Amino acid sequence: MTSDTFRTAARALLDRADILAGHTETPGQLTCTYMTEAHQAVASQLAQWLRTAGCDSVHVDAVGNVLGRYHGTGAGVAGRLVTGSHYDTVRNGGRYDGRLGILMGIGLVEALHTRGIRLSRDLEVVAFAEEEGVRFGSTFLGSSAYAGHFDDRLLTTLDRAGTPLSQALRDAGHDPAEIARAAGGASGIAHYFEIHIEQGPVLLDLDAPLGVVSAIAGSVRRRLRLTGLAGHAGTTPMRLRQDAACAAAEIVLAVESRCDGRNGLVGTVGQLEVPNGSVNVIPGACLLSLDVRAADDATRDAALADIDARIAEICARRRVSLESETLLRASAVACDPAGREAWRHAIGAQGGAVHELVSGAGHDAMMLARVAPVSMLFVRCGAGGISHHPSEIVTEADVAAAYAAAWAFLLAYSA
Image (tube, rainbow, N blue to C red; front, side, top):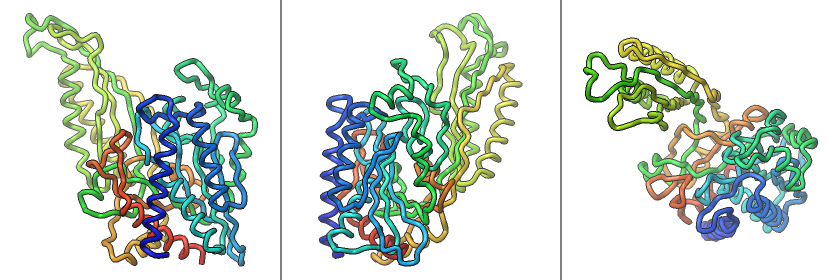
């Protein structure tokens, strides 16, 4: 394939992303949450494109994953290649998060089919129905079902309107009892590769269109409640105060100080609240979140241990009590060394510098890593690296570069 061919494919991908963005729950914004009318319309459109691209079989499983398979020759090569990502969005989100990888997979099948090329392996494109967790609060519903790790207890989870997940599935024409069958395809995968926008500014800062993901960070999320003693802002001396907000402020700075970026280590306090706060009352309580991530669990857990020690010291000194609840603990995922090398070679063949980076965000590849080797390719995200936002953008040139790398990767991995 020539550079002009890759540019043409990139233009087609961007046009398709625009078409998908027309299916939304909120006019003037892009919101496509699990099992809504907009979500089902996107699934139907993706299934149609998979068929016209040349897939030999296309179906939608019991959780709404859309799967298309392009048969290989089966020339003595075990296992199939799988690529894809998710098609749900956050509220008022961007049009490339997740969908870029699905549309790239459709474009690759299209390129193979129009040229009459059959790989030695089957190529399966999977559009995972849910990754963001917006409607029911649980992430990776689609890829967890595909990988055989769906938790049936989630079927009783309610959305804001009080609708159980099981009912939402039935309303959309799916049978929750069939979810176990969605895992049938998880066996026999030789390799899963996911192409995704970076959702950050690193590649933009490096002036690089593409990056190879070395690992997907493991994260721990906690909810903290600090309880001090409320009092009059004018009559309580500073030395006698048990100010929960001041303790929280120290904790925020302690997190920032400890999470120094080495080995992908980052820490964030993204929520901070003084319940029933008043301008003339010393805060008697403060609620805050804590999110710590790193490329490996050992680095993350060492940082958490140090942060916990600092929090204990701060609370003791300020005579503030602490309640801590762990909301999430997700292990880091190291990308497959052979897959990383194949991506490095594919990018290097274009004459560009090869950069590796840790993904701080979670991806469907984390679920697939339970059943197969995985790799990821990041595509530069414009507009300062913003994502989960209407300003999320990729360029035609960068998508074309991703197509060129993916084509080389595909041919190398199917040899």
